[in-house]
Image (tube, rainbow, N blue to C red; front, side, top):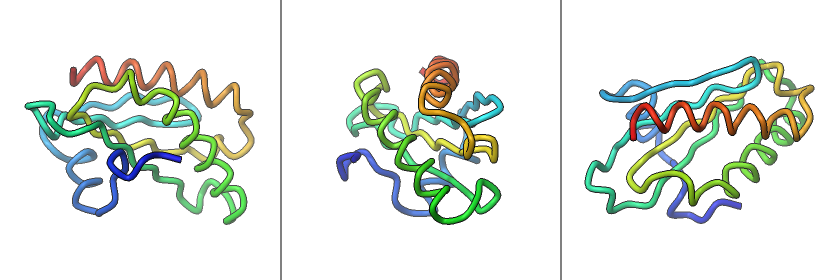
Length: 118
C-alpha cells in the first residue's frame, strides 16, 4: 500500500502529469510511465497514480494488475526524486503478464521517464 502522501488523487493532478509542461513518457508493451516534476523545489514527496482501463479486462483482472503495480512502485519510492509525480498506465497485455515481467518493464520505463525529467 502506498502512503497517502505518495498518492495522486484528483483528476487535475493526473492531468498535470499527463499533459503538463516538461513531462516525459516511457513505455513498452505492458505499461507506460508518465513523469513530471510538478514541485520543482522538491519539497513534496513523490506521488504516483495508476490508470488501468476496462481494455485490460474485467474488474478482477484490473484490480490484480493495479495491486501488482502498486506493490512494485511502493518498493521503488526511494528511487523517485522528491517533487516528481508519476502516472503508471497499464496496457491490455499487462492482464496476462507475470509479476516478474511487470517488474522488469516497470524498472526499464521508470528509469527512462524519471531520467528525462530529473
